[in-house]
View (spheres, rainbow, N blue to C red):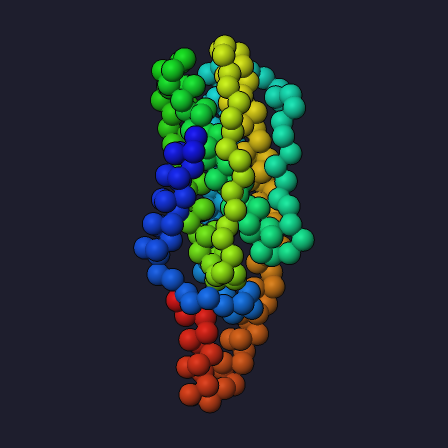
Length: 219
């Protein structure tokens, strides 16, 4: 799992470096309109994909109802950056959990297409969103390293334990994505207000000032 975590972090860093980058800035100066719109679109897609994956997983394994004792993955943090850190950490954690779910699916059930395809889609969008989260965090607090949570160490020795583990992971992912969506929409509101205010000032500003104002939000 340690090597898997390193690969995920390397991927997120690589994608972040390849994305056109804004210079470090306080929250008020971030181009929230672009970054948050992209992130919210991905999270909305993830919500639908996680729900579809859960349905397919339950049908394949003959499960019904709700899995017992699903961990609480609610977003934590008292401010924007702490919430951003928490979302990023749980994003990476879910990628590691899903890697183990995929491993069990391959070893015990051959990872049938109706589960494998939605699982790949979810994993891909988690990786993409982690790169955007890292970019946003570097804009707000460039000197602070994003922390990750401890990788999952538990093992499962029989098919029911493996099946139940995957069920809890995917159900937890669905709940977490819904909470992330809620938090991001709250975060986006002050950003949009700031952008609207800046646009109004830009219309009234002289030509030279308009250029400086626009540059503050350009990437």
